[in-house]
Image (cartoon, rainbow, N blue to C red):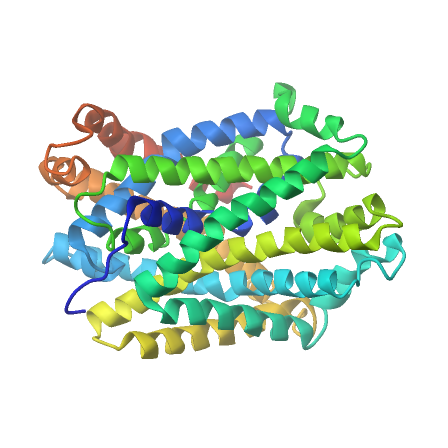
Length: 451
């Protein structure tokens, strides 16, 4: 790139980065993870992990990206010339593309369920048949491929627009809309008969259920939710102006992500309790349980069921898109910076590769269900590889690079904008990046090995 694009305002920075962070991890993953791990006590650990352990990793990626103003591979090469760090940077080019390959499949599920909502599929059948829709859909030989293709087409179209006209423009509209939609769902959920039990579950801690595994799950969820370790924050930070306050934009992103996760929990759990369903419903909680709940709560009022269900799945689709575009952007930036490839060609090439791998993942619940990689389906193998290993490894690399490879003077200069902001807090943040965050990541690795 002869002249690097940049985000136009602080709101644009926070909207784009929060968009990268706020995704399926907040709406799809967070409610069922906290449901499996005790509710309110899990939330407290999750908040602490996000602000004390995970936010410093966010700052590490931000410092590398803005200082180098390059892709993840080029940033390491520029800031540590003559070393092998750039090869580790290459890992964080590959990771988000693998992540996008199966993430797009789940994004496609939201496309399918939005279509089902709008076509009155959840009101034209008995409520008891609705949970079976999901299994029938994902085992189909063609439907998941079609919706995966539709989702990837939307992601590709946004990224083709570039940083300002594509990513920034979409994020500035999608993020406020996303918050409004999930707030609408939350208000509806809280008004249901019996919803108070769900509220109590979320605000009354039961520390007897807070096991070591639950604490590790909270740390892992905080890590996954902020989209760390795959270079998305680093890449977006390379488009951030030098005068932007990294402390403020990072805290704004983390708080937005936390707030959205909590709103999503208050949107889902009261409805789950109102319907008399167990909160630990697993990954199918959103796609199997909630349409059933919407049907039961709006029985005799199909328009209400359709409207609430459609709003919910629009929110899920928007959340999935804001995260997915950041994953594709990492690879696009790499090809544009390092190989001089035109943005359009880079976008189409990488989108095609992710789409092709995603087909294998989409079929792993149906025709390819018996095809295993190390005993796992294609989908589960990529999910485990990215979530349990590549994301934490990338986060460890970034924190070690900032905390131990870059000079303290360079880190201070970038974080404080040349000594003009955040000077008093720099020591605390630097200590967390250098010592606390790496220990937290090692705990994640140890837990994954032992579980």
